[in-house]
Image (cartoon, rainbow, N blue to C red; front, side, top):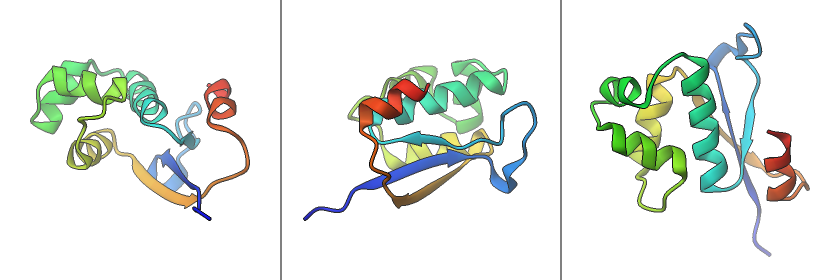
Length: 104
């Protein structure tokens, strides 16, 4: 039996300033990309600005946010660092990926 993994994106130290401190659940690449997009927008940055902070092109940020298959883990980690976020991996709850999408 395969174990199910759930990833959360959250701000370190759980700062709760206007909802920023809440965790976002992602089970698919698209959900992970959407979480990065929400946090980028919450930070008031464009894709180009985030890319510059990551030393990558705007098109790379766009691919990450779209949940494209070619996205490298290194790119994801650079985006998280640039947005002052961390990735948490834990056993998945019983909700389906569709139910997770409906939360947002």
